[in-house]
Length: 50
Image (tube, rainbow, N blue to C red; front, side):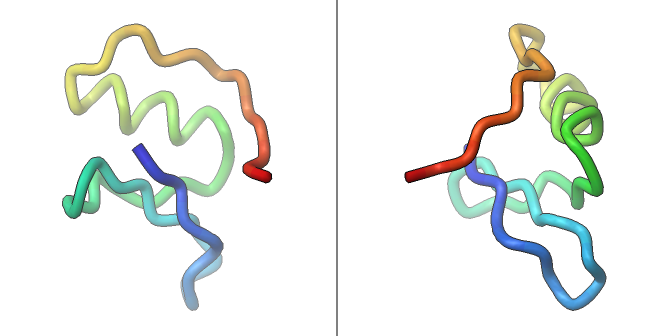
């Protein structure tokens, strides 16, 4: 799963593989998008890559 940098719409595209699952505007949106995709273990922990 990847959360990309903000797009021109200011939201962050959420990808699973090469499939865009949705656009997140905050951590809770990422959790909701993952749950809708059937990934129930999603938590609201938000970390940055490095």
